[in-house]
Image (cartoon, rainbow, N blue to C red; front, side, top):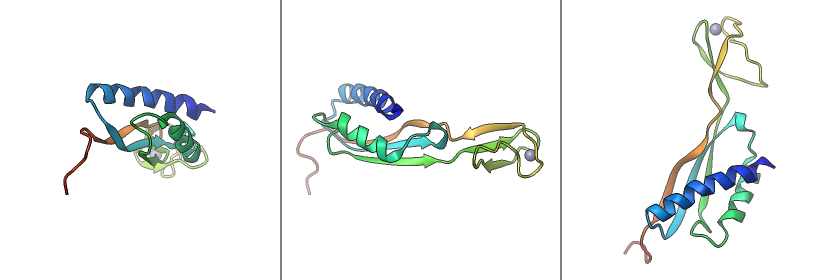
Length: 121
Ligand SMILES: [Zn+2]
């Protein structure tokens, strides 16, 4: 299950940020996950919750934004969605295709609370 390794490295980044900014609580974590990473969002969320337990991340909302696999033609430079791993330009049939989207795997945004007690209403 490669989700465990992924979440493990994401948590290293989160932990570093938490220490650096003296964060009391992480409210929301937004991830960008490309189609090519073959990450299963449900599995990722489950792993995330396991890692979050007993940390400042516990109870945080995990948002996963999936990025479709996108290619760009090297001949006519058209961008298109790659389906079923068919790396062929729909416009000119060229197989000179470069992947321009779908490899993403990173924390796009993290919403945190810095001080205990929160916002006065
Ligand atoms: Zn083309």
